[in-house]
Image 1 (cartoon, rainbow, N blue to C red):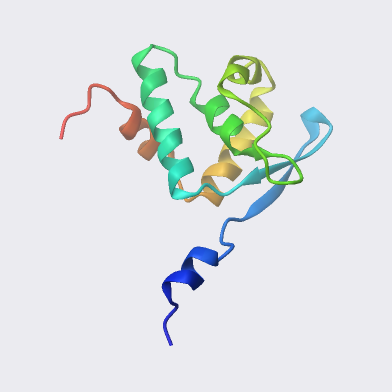
Image 2: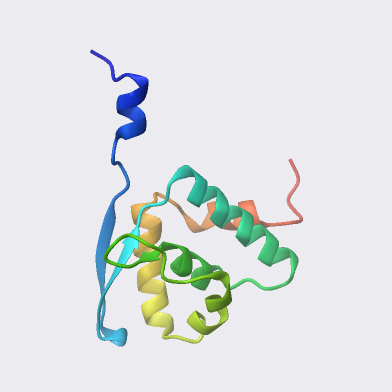
Amino acid sequence: MALNRQQILDAQDLKTVDVDVPEWGGPVRIREFSGKDRDAFLTAAHKRRDKGVIELTALLVALAIVDDDGEEMFTEADIQTLNTKSAHALVRLEEEIRKLNRMNEEEAEKNSDPGQTG
């Protein structure tokens, strides 16, 4: 029998994964994005691109890292500071976030390119 509306809405379907970040001294918890979160990332990436500020890796990391309760740890104000952290750590986290969320770099670049047409 197929799931009903309420079963779908009640499903706890967002995963979290702990990623070891030795540069920072231990593991970091990242989360799978909801549809709303994914759209927020693509929208924020587009807006930042319009301002000439890329920082896509730091933006992605800021949106995905959560505490033990699943609550976001960083805000938009933290992105520049996060971007000063180890590139190895940021890239490792970016790769794991993209894998968890089934995203690829081309998709983010395409959706954040203000010069793109049709």
